[in-house]
Length: 425
Image 1 (spheres, one colour):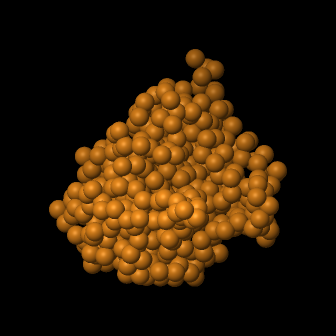
Image 2 (cartoon, rainbow, N blue to C red):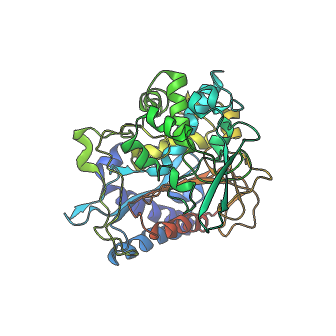
Image 3 (tube, rainbow, N blue to C red):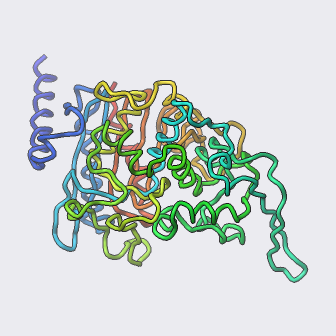
């Protein structure tokens, strides 16, 4: 009986020593701390996360990262690695702030579902019922003329774009930077570009004058749809998207460092990417979250910390509640994290995954190229952040880093793999 007790004691001492290196974060963690073995994880196997990330930092593949692993409502692993600003020699800390890009989308989706719970909108609503310039959008049919040039003809949509289409990316509204077709080129290239250059009214008017790239509900295409939903939230609530999220999500969950524009007092905590991306050889592009956006874009303009996003993720794992406060109903979270594509083409989604209302959702235990459980769900940010939730195992991961180049795809595979191999029971 002595050997297991000694092993747990050793694990506890290592765990507490690790937190001693970050006293500010240790004094106020976002969730209760736990020795990994106490929640069914292996300390020895979780240590592979740190060794792998530290090796990448030493090889100049990324400047630094913050990693959180949650299980059974507790933080079993919560570490900061490398540098917040490598050029300046500033160490990474757990309260470092990151531009989270598309990890904004699940929070905007939650805002839509809050309004749905109040009966102020329904997912079957045509988007034009809330944003009139988007009513009656036609669908582009692309052909080639006799001279070989692209021709765009417009046919009527077989049905309106609904709020459900926007939530699951089946609206036919694309990202302009996604492909090189003539119709895609008409659209704003990204959420961040839209937020910096267009007011909500200008954004909606611009989209209202363009054709859809596919019939509503016919196929999945990652898109500006959630930026449109942000405009819907503003129209229905009478508040800016940031004000609504602050009042209804961020403040109730204690997400004190999440916002669309950072105040001056927090700007020294922003993570810096490497000056040259190791994969592309070019300077990386990351949204400047110190700028006041023309539009608080629901698809990609928020900034946050690992600790704040841990609170959001744990609320989802708890199916809508955290610390006795309910921000979403249990049935709402179950609905959001179900697959909403069915037989609809899933496009370039990872094999084995469909899409819910804000997340990619695993359809079966096989097919996907990563270990996991049926019903696990995830999403990522284009600058290198990610989260992943497995309700079956009651486990989740939050990873924060500024690695906007191709390297970010590596960490999307790495983190679920290294956490799943550490599960003991």
